[in-house]
Each structure stands twice: as C-alpha cells, then as structure tokens.
Length: 66
Ligand SMILES: [Zn+2]
Image (cartoon, rainbow, N blue to C red; front, top):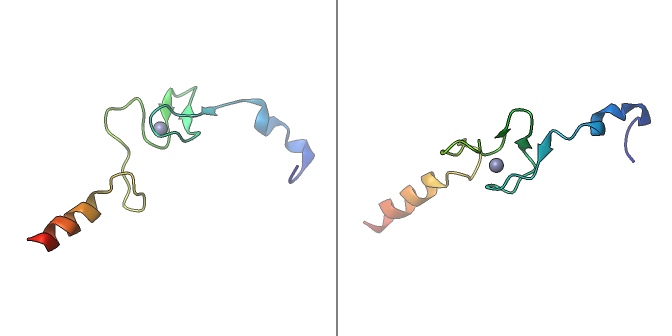
C-alpha cells in the first residue's frame, strides 16, 4: 500500500478495463471508449510521442531504399 489510506475512494470504482484492441487498461466503461487507442473508434489515436502509428519510421526506411 502506497500513499494515504483515506484515499479508498480511488479504487472503489472501476472506470478503466483492459481494452480489447490495444491491451492497455484504458477502456473507459462510462465513456465506452478507450482513452489510449480510442476504441471503438475505427481509427487509432495517434500522437507523435507514441509508437502507435509507427508511420514516421517506415517513411524513413522507404526513403532510404530508393
Ligand atoms: Zn485501447
């Protein structure tokens, strides 16, 4: 146990469960949406800092081959 015990309220409610698509515990039950990948949205949430897209790298590779 870490931190103040009086913060029991925090773990009372399960809001995020394991997402089927990305496997992160980010699927919000109340919003019915994954905060990590955006499930059930058809497209993934993409950020430059995340490797979810993985696009910039492949572009670099294809560019160097030609
Ligand atoms: Zn997800």
